Length: 128
Image 1 (cartoon, rainbow, N blue to C red):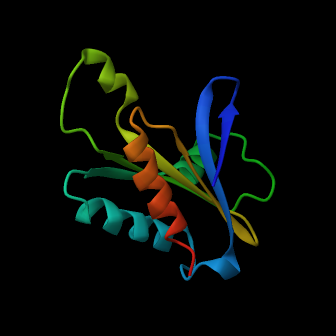
Image 2: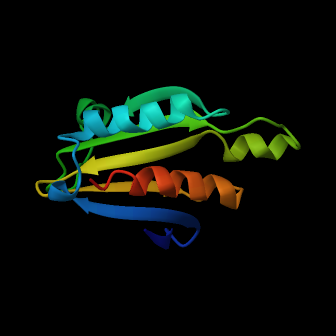
């Protein structure tokens, strides 16, 4: 898993997986994998799955070459509201993009390291 700074300000975690490295056959199956992880976690609440690719096509938006699918799974780890600003950092999202030979899974850094550790473990759990 690689941590980079996107657009000079967003700490982003990225994992590229060859399709041969995962048992899931498409983005929908990967979304089901993450949905199961979220629904079985003792605190996390699933919010929605957003089909970013279909949305972008429907508004005649620009899609990068080679991208076959792009979806986000939205969820929240929040069990406290210690400050109003915490709502700006929630909910969490994991994005999954599909290309001909690989998947790219990405998420923004969470306010707490243990949450990053959980999302990183879930993502690395895709290795078959």
